[in-house]
Length: 213
Image (cartoon, rainbow, N blue to C red; front, side, top):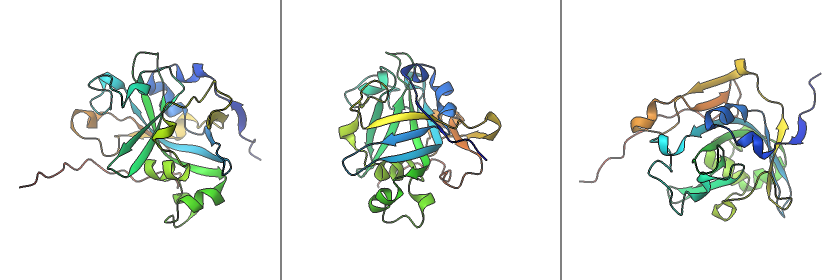
């Protein structure tokens, strides 16, 4: 019989490491989202690392702006961005303060609060699709820009926390190029996922936008 997931919260020291160490180590951890509607818990199964100003695929590649300021630390906070004029995506900030780094949460399994997640994700055909993809994950957890900067580690009133869970063994961690990232950032194999997990989203290569004629 498998042991129950460890419910010890992760501390800020966990996130105060290089982004490429933190990202695969997040697999199997449990994200807790508290709200007035009730709690949801999600076991992380897919993530992507973004290495700030050293990474052409990162929002922080060209430096600090009001939009990406949370990425520059301190670690252990939530970075939320709005994309394509309709979706939010949730990231966890890591690395030393002053050096931008974040891990995009791409997919997970809802382990508690599935009924609430279903109400937010009416188009999901089954529970495996509730948080299968970063926009779906954020929708299921009711994440928007108002939660940008939320503390994962030190604020007892925060809507988020990360539990130790059941870390995925290294041999079960797969890696490959990041979904939808083009240009120089496309060469980095910084997408990490739990092998053979049905909640992992499909990989899609970057497709350049056509210029209007």
